[in-house]
Length: 83
Image (cartoon, rainbow, N blue to C red):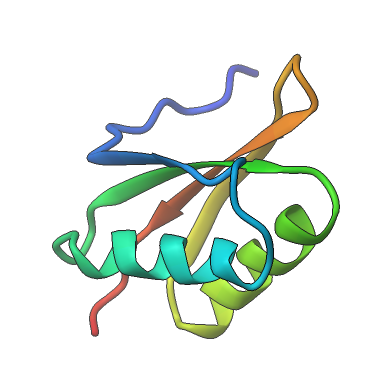
C-alpha cells in the first residue's frame, strides 16, 4: 500500500545545526504556519531524529511520517495543531 502524499506548506533543512537548536528551528517554522498546515523537516540521524519528533509531539503537534532518506538523513512530516 502506497504511503499517502501530503501537501507540504513549508520545508526546513536543519541538518547543519546541533541539538537543542534543531528543535528550536523546527518550532519556529511551525509557529509561522497556520493550523492544519504541513511542515517538512530534513534532519540528521542520532539526537535530532530522536529528540525533534518527540518534542514536536509534546508541543501538541501531529507527526504524520518519519522516513529515512538515501543519504542518511531523515524527513519528518508534521501537521501544525492549534496554538
